[in-house]
Image 1 (cartoon, rainbow, N blue to C red):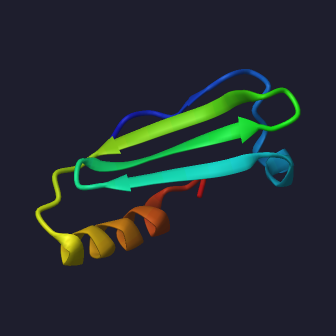
Image 2 (tube, rainbow, N blue to C red):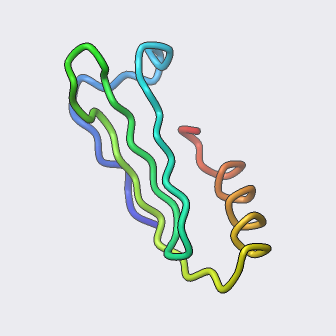
Length: 71
């Protein structure tokens, strides 16, 4: 898994002020956290993973969401 990339302004305690966008594909998962007022990405993480089908995609997504600390 890739490490979380964030800028110095990102604060988990202020999560309600950000917009979370999650991308799911057969190549893995990623998320962006955007500060809407400043119109910029404050955090990003990508987790590359080869997935062979829809059933495995759903299973791996569930596991990823449960194990990803920030989510």
